[in-house]
Length: 281
Image (cartoon, rainbow, N blue to C red; front, top):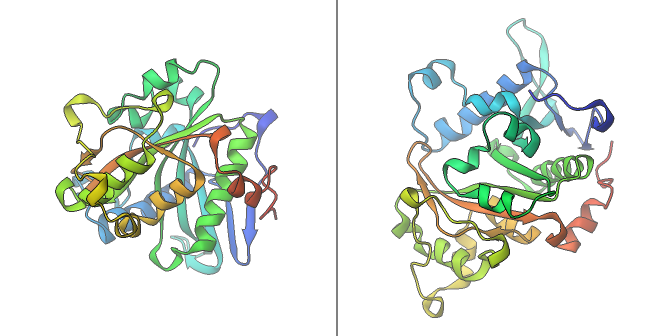
């Protein structure tokens, strides 16, 4: 778990709605619980393929976890016994956050394995980048309230660390681009980043997203088919990178999300509060 500088330490709690609270993980044990949640969603519910180590631990984990902050949504009304028999509130949602300074000190961003993001970083010296990743929510909690709490936590984090640009991969289920041609084409025609923010997938993994002409694309159907997370990014004002990437391990096709903070939809910024006060506890 990444250490926070004392001068920019976030509050213990970033927000609360009813029994749900959003905050950062406070211990390695909580990070492990987030990894178990990711395993449950990615490997048991969805179609990720576990190697022997992942199968044995029943945790989705990689070396980046050690240098990231882990945002959690916790349900205080759903208690589960730990190994010591003590009842603890259940972690029902998580997001992984990696700041540029931590990434550069430890070999770069996770996203750089799929997209040429270094060119974008180099073109924007002085801007602070934040990588968003490993987002997941337990199925019963996939609703507006939980998603809003997660975004409230991210917005609090962005303000506290003076982040200028958020980026990361978002996934569409399936590894055959032809079966999701309408979704990829919709993103290509209607959400592609302007030249100044455009980033391409690495050449050996590049999948063309322009699979259907705009004039024959059913925009409403394509938009409806997109995963809720991707639609949420678009509502915030996110741009989509050039080219998709098939991730066979996770059984997904990934697209790059780029969100300059200054370009975010003002309606949503105002909704969460310029000082992230909407769900403050």
